[in-house]
Length: 130
Image 1 (spheres, rainbow, N blue to C red):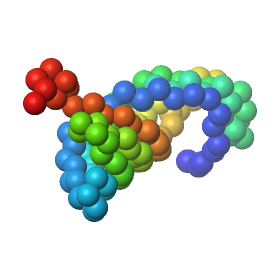
Image 2 (cartoon, rainbow, N blue to C red):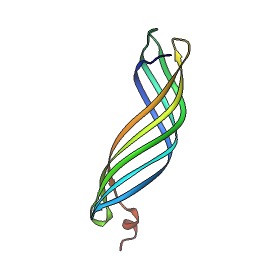
Image 3 (spheres, one colour):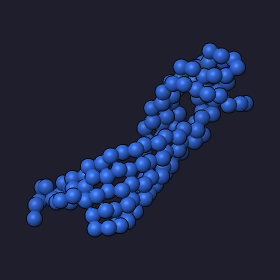
Image 4 (cartoon, rainbow, N blue to C red):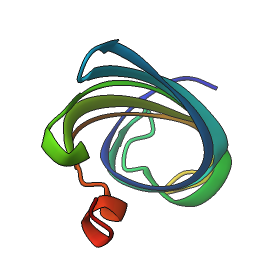
């Protein structure tokens, strides 16, 4: 057993149950904190796995327990619309993948970071104005 450095790509599809807390800070400014648990499918396609054997490819799909944590800030504009900025950290652990080009398998823990800009429009106010 050992560690190595891999180069390639990953595709993640997650299904999470989340809870968020909005903290009004000042008139139209709100901070949000939250997180969630669930599961995620992680598909790996590595083209270069730096291990002593060389020429080893790690690819496939596995499902694992996932959790996420996040924070954000938003500013309310006129008519309930808002703009915001948010961050999410996603962790998916205990994933296993078979090796091609060498015997055995690899255990992988996936971590992802996302930064999002948001523009929110309250549909109810558009469909049923005051």
